[in-house]
Image 1 (tube, rainbow, N blue to C red):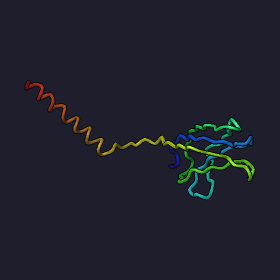
Image 2 (spheres, rainbow, N blue to C red):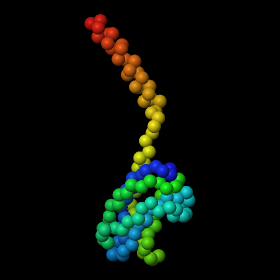
Image 3 (cartoon, one colour):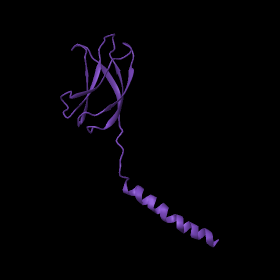
Image 4 (cartoon, one colour):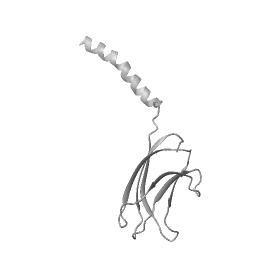
Length: 118
């Protein structure tokens, strides 16, 4: 992730067995440290999966999306089906796109000439 870029985060989480707590998501440059918090949420049901949706701007450059829970050490949070979408738009079109666009523009006058002959 790139600092300053906006991202959509979606995942499912649960704290099965009726425990309460939060699921935190962070950004880190290390796979062994939590890093910077970008999302925190509590599941709405103690016995079912909760879908979480969030949009955030990355505060730091990061290679890892990290997860932790505020539960006591002998309790577990469950997470599944993470989706991370970037809002960063490419400002420069791909070369193949430019080639197709240019070919289409070049064909317009040719088509007009052929149409006038018939």
